[in-house]
Length: 112
Image (cartoon, rainbow, N blue to C red; front, side):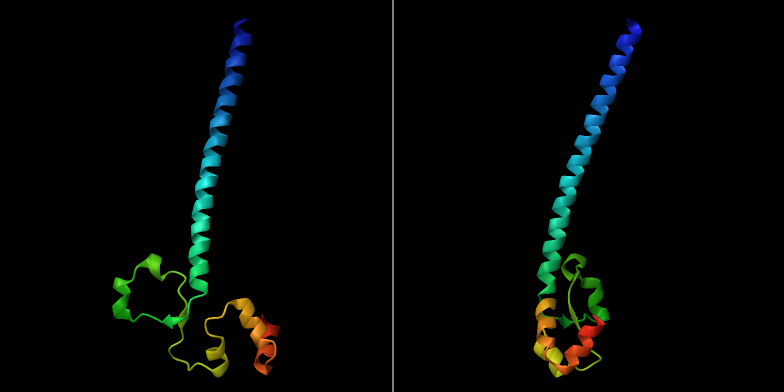
């Protein structure tokens, strides 16, 4: 009888341990889902934003990493072409659709 009780207790302990493990994994997945949704919302908010000038080296120490992540930057060294000026602020699908009719766009879209 003692061997049978020992097996039952061992099996019960294993089931409780497994249940606790799956509950912890479920809680972790819910936390991860919240983190992921927050990240997607932040990226979506930044993708549609108008590009801004890059901060200078003097401004780097004052930058807030969370506020600066996924920020679209304007190229400072190269002039903006008329096509880029027209397409500034558009999302990728609209950008591709706008380029389809232009000669420049046909070459760009083949590379994308």
